[in-house]
Image (cartoon, rainbow, N blue to C red; front, side):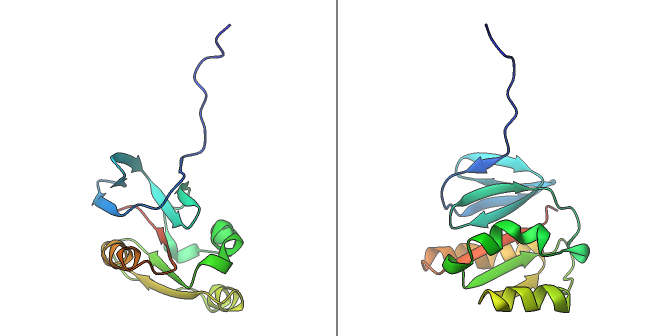
Length: 128
């Protein structure tokens, strides 16, 4: 007997460049996702974050779990650049991750370049 619709957490199990962003979401790998996203070495994940101003280590739990494979974390903070807290920067440094906050558009462009260069890059992007 059919169970009905099964809702799973959004996840793409691979690395892909970002084709487009805006209207509250992102397009990549011939797919689209509404809302914020994490682009990590293990794949692309939907991210339940709407504002970068209140980012905590808990919000970046997946990033920290994959720290051994990440050198640079690009943080797309929305339309405007918002700094990361000293506490969050310290935690990322402890995991040997360099974090660069920038507007989401700049983070998308930078991510695509670094991905094409096969760099150890990840991105946490607030949807715009």
